[in-house]
Image (cartoon, rainbow, N blue to C red; front, side, top):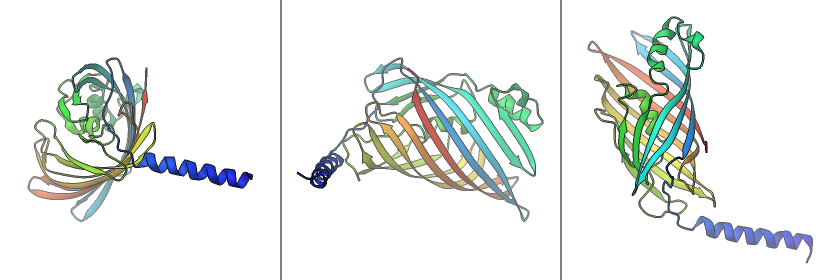
Length: 278
């Protein structure tokens, strides 16, 4: 057999087994045990553009969130974890001014507006958050009372960046499933997600994400909000845990300030990478 024929035969063989595997139905679920610990690092690039009194202003934000998630208990289908913010880093630019905050750099704690950010963020670092979900990723409990009444940061715990909601049946490449993600207690935010299985290998699954979100009230403030999110995440098939994700989000909102509607647009790109610590 010539070398060319050997290569062609090998190609046909590999193509045939890859094609067969791609059509195989797979079961996606979270499979972790007490003691498992994961580190999530999310880098966020965000622009918030406001329009007021004929002027347009943009707040530019670059943020990094490092979270540690430790599995405490697994009972039946429920997974009870403790999540902590281990580091928060932030850079803001607006009106020609720049504000920096880094929870690991105390020199950023007392610089003008940075001191107000530091006072809020420093209370969050290291505080435990109880997070319970089932083995498909449906949220059963999220207690953020130990860190803040503000849900803005805690939304990062359960967004498409870090945990997917898997279907209750097997799927193959090309299949999609949809779910409404339960909002946090006292939140008016509604999130609808569509997931599509894009690719499967022996160790990983690639999932496409499309979502919509809307809300009329956040933190007691009247806000008309509509948005979309798209992206992709790669998960570990053996554990269901995220490996990496890239998410783009676009939100249009009207903020009511003393009866005056202020339109704003939020453009966000977030990239999350996860690693197992033990």
